[in-house]
Length: 224
Image 1: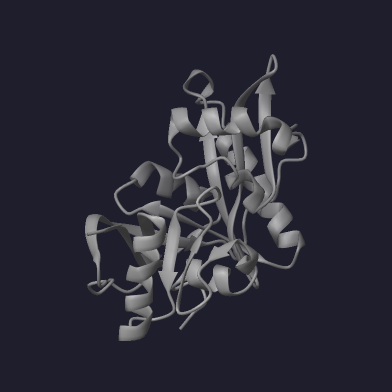
Image 2: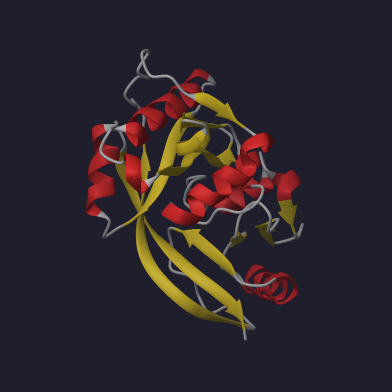
């Protein structure tokens, strides 16, 4: 199995294990950081552990290559197909593009922008999953991009969004190029996820050097 076939499990068992809730055959991110959960595999013990973890901590999203079997004590609230894309040769960063580092001081504005634009699940401490950068206009954060799941050799590009008033200027693509360049400089490969029916986003990612790797099942689980 490729480490990105079940990326949340790989991340929570390695590079981001300090953020994991549950230390056995099922784990999830602390809820202030992300909503993803994962079982080690689809055996009876890991699936039972996943059900117990959901009962203790609440709903979660499972993101992996294989369809998820029934999880004891849980129901499927939603299921969609997505794609995972990998950039073995991403476009280089634009040296003339100015951006700034984002951190705790800008957390409220980052959460507000993500809440408005809905780039994917974003919470109070999602920005601490990796390095985030952004663009401001007259002091207001208008675009950002950063890192989410991290595994040995791979880092996910995520949280990419632009305020509706400033779309069309290519800010998202330029920020993604800068984030990817940093990941490559660390000796890692950038990857990302998109819904399979989001043709415009997938087309943008292909222009930036990302290529389809696998289909992924996006399953929202809740306790019965």
